[in-house]
Length: 308
Image 1 (cartoon, rainbow, N blue to C red):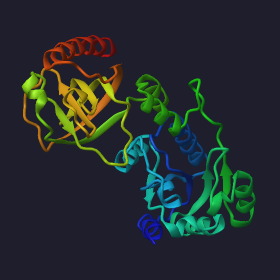
Image 2: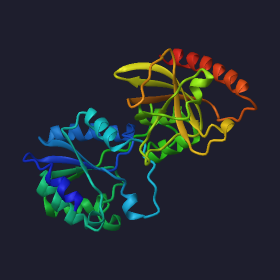
Image 3: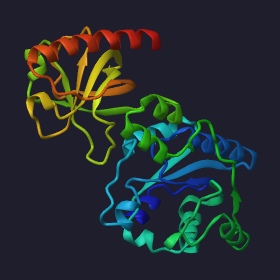
Image 4: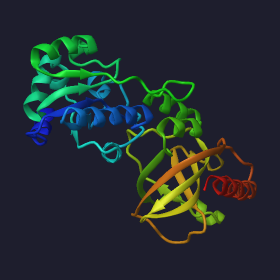
């Protein structure tokens, strides 16, 4: 019972107002909810708390589900904490939790987190088979001694501000739209690993990124990016794809860090995406590829100069 052990590790004495959700991406809609959570908790002399899941519930509810997460669990927790909430409770979504009724889950939240209120969106559901909507939770609250706060949804773009909208934008290569929904630059973090080292031979040595298998990867193509290494920021040209000119089979994420010449194998970097400049292409020769890469770098330098 992973979820129960996780709750026990976060027991607190002071009463709390709680937001619950996957919160993948911690986009502007989530930030809007957390801002309201903080204000309402202060108005009611409560701690503001966020309960989120270490794994996507879909992986438990559907064996064929493959998570494509906008943020890793570690990054998600950091982003939620940065909003100013009092504490974050990451728990495992396991089979036992999926079978709990809303009432049984609330009893656990009251016991371990001293939950006195829920702050949730109007389309929120809780319990096995999504049994309890906001209306039913309000009725339960009258009997169980908690209140339900439902702030309005946040709308900014022409499409709904949802994690699914971010995923769709990334998969189509629309980085600008994804960033506008997130309220920050989409990023990928990981360890620099050895690749085929063709970039070095071509005059463009690249840092190959190792990623969480459950994290979403933007559409194949060439991107203007910024790279953070040891708290230093560099401009970058990032290629996502299979390098069709060389008939590779596996997708890779390779970043040429501009004005940089150091071996960083084994170090961790963060790559922030600014804009997609072109699709992945197959070239007739390595000479044609090199010419295109030189043009890509010039274009990316212009884009990043405007964005800095």
